Image (cartoon, rainbow, N blue to C red):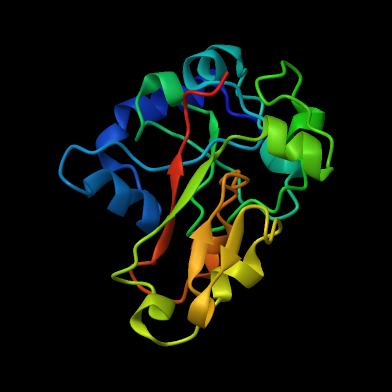
Length: 197
């Protein structure tokens, strides 16, 4: 990926109305009329305001991401977010490789060791929420796909009768459960946490 230039940002500003959004992000932007987009910041990202002021929009986090889940805002989330990284878990979720924090030159995405304890303490992307009205397991049809997709099974999510998913305090919001959900709309979604310190 080539780094964005000032000339490109000026030309994008002129073409803001014609921006092409991913289907998922476009749906989030239009959900409920004025609702903000539901995106995640990479694992280890600082609180939103601090993140936007610290990130230098270098793109290195996206370059190193092996799952290619990190995308970059253009103007769809406002000028303050322009060029900053985000993740839409339904498009491609985070696999918690923690490589993005290793390459961030400003610690906008802080380095996190790829071990369970540091991940549980430092990664606060969001938290999964289950819609029992949509979840197949709560409708009497065994599923369990979200549980099997979770890298933190029995710490972030556990299953009950008919593999009904129950989100635990250890959920860090990577989005692999949302990505894997076979329902449309998905029965499990990540609610972002932009406020962590």
